Length: 101
Picture 1 (cartoon, rainbow, N blue to C red):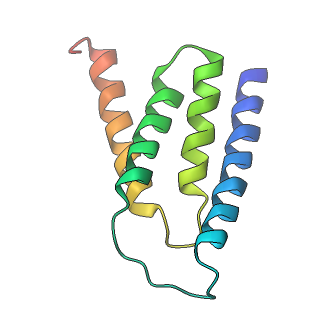
Picture 2 (picture 1 turned 90 degrees about the vertical axis):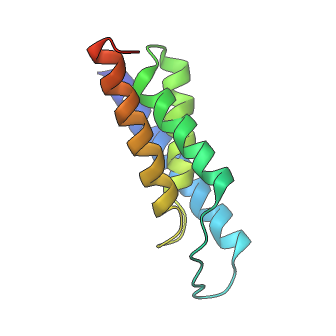
Picture 3 (picture 1 turned 120 degrees about the horizontal axis):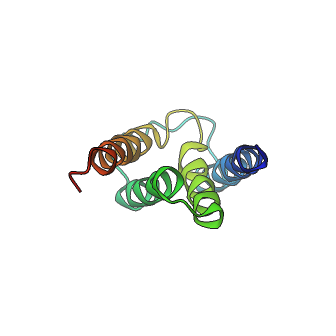
């Protein structure tokens, strides 16, 4: 049970760090940025895969921190990258559980 509390706290810290980074990157009140950020997408895939697929508490904690960082940007930022990371992690999870991988 303590593991889940650690994951939630670390995910919240990652979200706050992502929000601070996003506001530092774009100081304007509103910026319509529709491009796909490959670096954030890779971070999201790595974060969600570590969070869901590792059986190690340290690796899962690092994964949820990175996933929270990507997901915690300003409203509208990181949503495509987070969706990409979640889809890859869920597909890999089902492939591992079914024994196909």
